[in-house]
Amino acid sequence: MTGQLDGRVAVITGGASGIGAATAVAFARAGARVVIGDYAPDGHDAASVLSVIADEGGEAFAVGVDVRDPAQVDALVAAACERFGRVDIALANAAIARRVPAAELDDDAWRDLLDVDLGGVWRLFRAALPGMREAGWGRLLVTASTVGNLEAWPEHAHYSAAKAAVVGLVRTLAAELGPDGITVNAIAPGIIRTPQTLDGVNSLGADGVARTGHTQPIRRVGEPADIAAGFRYLAGEDAGFVTGHLLVIDGGRSLAH
Ligand code: NAD
Image 1 (cartoon, helix red, strand yellow):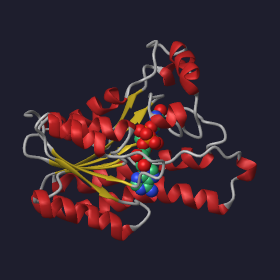
Image 2 (tube, rainbow, N blue to C red):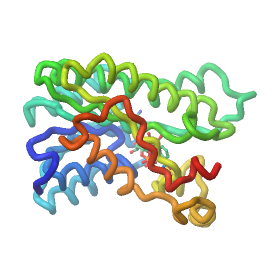
Image 3 (tube, rainbow, N blue to C red):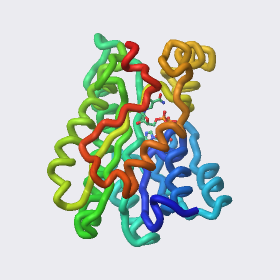
């Protein structure tokens, strides 16, 4: 496994499933050593991702982490540093989506979701920052969404607010940390075929996914690998002059809506 990310160490939250899992494999194929942090409340398991990486000769391990807990996120970064020496790339990807009509969105539901989808992002970035500043090189990456930035998702006001907020975080950190050699970027996926989209609380189901794909300029929904390819680019040397950017990977969906 050699390529754009040779010698780099990447930490990925939510890396046991969907987009995070595909990105873990893509990073390893590009030469990075990978540490997956995942809570896996839905029974997702990092074992299959780890075995794909190991079978291809890559190096990776997983740590059980709830991104709502600062101590656990600090421990994730510490585990990566202990085993692989440092963290060069931090991808804050873990998130939950919950359908709640606005009229029923109480403080608990609001706080619970923002704690994962926004707080979890900042906790990972904060934990990874000191090492990156010391090294004078770093990549802070986050999985945002077209939702909240380019299109609306009714009955997901808290999710939309969190996904818009991470873009604000990215832009400010990019300006602040550029002089330290750290770039900060986000990807806005459209509809991607992951367990959450197919089976989760917000499930479209296989038929819904196919129908949705057919309404987009590129006549399919996205695959996790489509997003992983974007993160692999943003994490590598080729993207050294790209910062504060929201890379939209949605098959043209947001243009058509
Ligand atoms: P997924 O459910 O397949 O994966 C999410 C992972 O995050 C799971 O493994 C889960 O265990 C983990 N996770 C959830 N809460 C956690 C917590 N508190 N601590 C640690 N880990 C936790 O979902 P996915 O579709 O691959 O989503 C990945 C990212 O992409 C999310 O940020 C999501 O909002 C975003 N996104 C997805 C789509 C889509 O269509 N699938 C579209 C736009 C954005």
